[in-house]
Length: 161
Image (tube, rainbow, N blue to C red):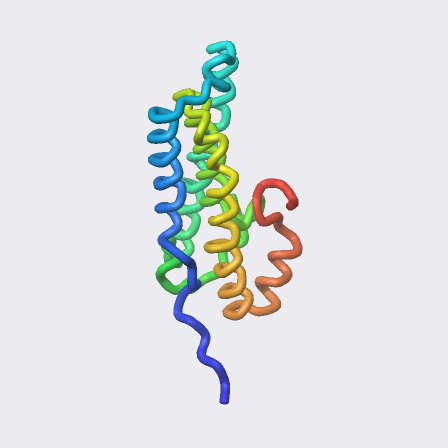
């Protein structure tokens, strides 16, 4: 008896909720228990670093456009119909999560939210194990060797980890 493949990745939560909750929690903690690491930085450097990291917002935008152009679903709560491996997906297998993480770090510097720097680590781990890994399992089961070759050729994030 063959096992039926799931219709979509079995992620722990709708992925954008993780960074959104992280930003809200960090903002609340910064208000309640302020840290002053970023505030101590020179304003020019802080804004330059934050602005540079905010370029991360482009990765999900470009990724969304690429998925729509190929006619597959953007949401991991819906089935993937096509494996997209070109454009931004040729640089990183996860432009949404990579870009979102970079943007969170950018917000931390721009708005002096030290707690966002601290909470980005558990947020990224939650995304990695609760979203990225299940998505990889789903795509591997659905696209087989094609996905495995893609996985071997393109880093999970912008850097090989």
